[in-house]
Every structure is written in C-alpha cells, then in structure tokens.
Image 1 (spheres, one colour):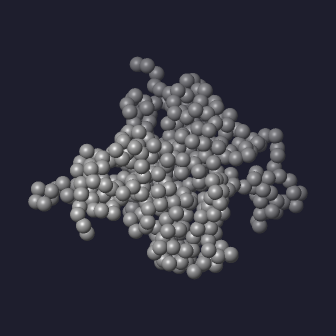
Image 2 (cartoon, one colour):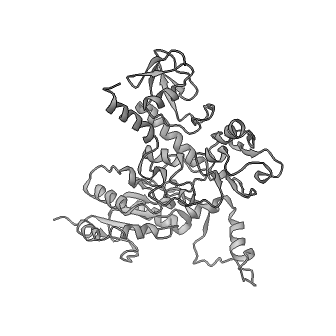
Image 3 (spheres, rainbow over the protein chains, first blue to last red):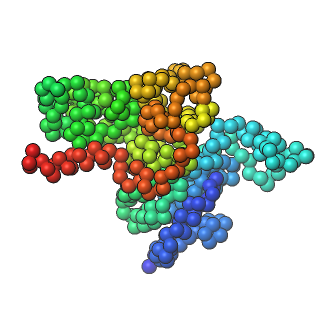
Amino acid sequence: MAAKPRVATASLAGCFGCHMSILDIDERIFELIELIEFDKSPINDLKEFTGRCAVGLVEGGCCNEENVRVLQLFRKHCDVLVSVGECAICGGIPAMRNAVPLKECLDEAYLKGPTVHNPAGHIPNDPDLPLLLDKVYPCHEVVKVDYHLQGCPPPADAIWQALVALLTGKPLELPYELIKYD
Amino acid sequence: MSKTFTLTIDNTAVKAEPGWTILQAADAAGVYIPRLCGHKDLVPHGSCRVCTVLVNGRPQSACTTPATPGMVVDTATDELKEHRKRLIEMLFVEGNHFCMFCERSGGCELQALGYRFGMLSPRYPYQFPVREVDASHPDVMVDRNRCILCGRCVRASRDLDGRSAFQFVGRGPEKRIAFNAADGLGGTDIEAADRAVEVCPVGAILRKREGYRVPIGQRPYDRDPIGSDIEAKAAAAAGAGEED
C-alpha cells in the first residue's frame, strides 16, 4: 500500500478557532488518521515539513513577514492549498487594523493606550520579532490558493467533507447549511 | 385593475398587470430574481444591477423595466448567474464586510446572496476602504463600512417615513450616505421604528441594543436561501394548479 497522503496545517494571523473546528470533527479524527498522516502542524507540533504534502490547510491571513514566509513554504510543499476561515480569506478581525495606519496602531498599543504602562516609551523592535506588514492580507493575495472554506470558523462538517473530497478525488459540493460566513 | 396580459419568463407563460415591472411579474409567478436595491415597498432604483435579466435577448434591470405583452425574459442563464455572482463579490471587496461580528449576519441580504450563489471567496482584491461610523443617535447607528449604496434608506425615509433623513453625497469611490442634519445622524428626526431603518439589506443601519437577539440557526437565511419564500409560491401554485 502506498504511503498515506500528508496533510499540513498552520495558523497565521488567526485565533486557532479554525484548528478547534478541525478537532471538532470528533471521533471522525480516527477515520482521518486512517486516511492521512499529519505533516507540519500545531496538531502534532511538527515544526518543519518532512515531505511533499497533498493538502495544506491555512488558517489566518498574513499580518507579518513570518506569516508570509510560512504561507510561501506551504505553497511550495503542498499540492493543494486551502484557505480555512474568514481570516485567511478576507483578513478577518486582524484586518480591522487596515483602516488605521500601522504607526497609529503601534502607538495605541504601546504608548497611548489607556492601560499602557511603558515609561521607557519603547515600541518592541527586537530582531527576533517578525516585522508587521503595512496591512493584513488575505492568503490568496499573497500566494495562489486553490480552495476556500468560509466560516468563522468553518463548520467541522465542511472541513471534513472538503478533506474527504480532496483526498478521494471527488468533487466538493457543500450543502447550503455548510456555507456560512460567520 | 385593467386587463392582464401574458409574457414569457424562463420559458413559462406568466400573467402580469399593466404597470408591473418584470420583477413584480416574476415575484407573482414565483420566479425569484435576486435583488439588492429593489424592495417591494419602494420605488425602483435600478442601481445594484443584481436583478439584470435578458429581455428579448438584451440585458435589462428587472426592477425598472416594465413588463409588456409578449415579452420574452430569461432570468437565469449561466452568463447572468456568473454576472450576478461577480456583482456580489465586488460588493464584498468594496466595503468592509466582516460577517463574523456583524449584527445583521444571518439576516443580511448581501450575505444571503453570497450563500445562494455559493460564493466561497471573492475573486477581486479587497479594498479595505476607510469609512466612518455614526453612532450619535440614541437608538439608531449607521456603519458605512457595510453600506452597499443601494439607496433603500434614502427612498424609504423620503417616501414612506416622510423625513428625508438620508441622502447620497460624493461621487464614485467617495459616494456615501449622509444625513439631513449638520451634526450627523443624531441631529435628524429619525426614529428606531422608521421603515428606513428596517429596509437596510445589510448591517449598515442598525437599531441599537437589538444585536444578536435571534439565535444562530433561527435567523432568516440560516436554513432557507433568500428567495425561498417567492419560490415557495410557485411550488404551492403548481400543487394547486389543477383546480384553478
């Protein structure tokens, strides 16, 4: 028997809610493990890609340079890349900062905010910290994304049906109840 | 009313009365033509173009085109459906439509059309425009981030409420809803019970302190696609059709 197809997942500028929704497939996770093997993913805590992946699930949009790097890495290693959830598709809650210039965001967070105590007046800029992008970008505006699963988070059933369809090569036709933007 | 006449909508002969638009004739016949700026109680506006249909082969907005005898209308060719879906996608990228925290989610007509058309992601780049919120009124708020410039509030406030509290200002990308008062929405005489508040298809005009009152699963478009009520009429008529 051929090796099981590998699935990688990542949370970029997201809240891990979409990963919770992946886990929300409940006992079907046993079926999933029969079908696939997880590669780089917070679910197994694997930090690096170990091989070619059939499917990459990406939660969250790109708010900093590390998000972009990880996303490009996913595009490179995955045959099919799926944007999972509103943040990956439209930037989501993090994209609310797109209406505010980055400098003003940082000033509010580290200098002027009503609960800020920062006598030195430093805005974090350690070289180890990924640089923030000017705006939060949807994943498909950074790399080519093949499929989108809407929802905040997408229903577990939608994720399950999409994964099964992708892994078995069948067309995915989500019923009305499973396409939700909230 | 005077004499009814017959026109053809999607290869079916349907009856209409003089003065009806194509949209009204289709509604009466149980054929749902998607619309955003159109509303049954308001004068047609013809601005969103979502209701565009083929009239004798030419694209026309169904909400502004009068139905005439013998007219041949196609409401759902593949090309029209694609065109509608793209309009909805453009509206999604043009504003800041964050469904996840919008009070109108589940009852929003823009979102419901996205659901009905199976939109999984807009194919256009997001604009992330900077727009203003006006919460100066005690009972009503306006969030221009969600406004699709359908003009329903303008017409409803003028024609149904008799207040003319809303108007468009600016042109092109600067076009936005403004209020008939120097100090914003709070300066108008608008009330929470006004039709202008109720007819907003999206979450741009909201009554305060009413958010999330309807639980998820029971909101208007959670289970049934938008337009199901109109299509149900056709199904019911087909069931009882033998007797008529």
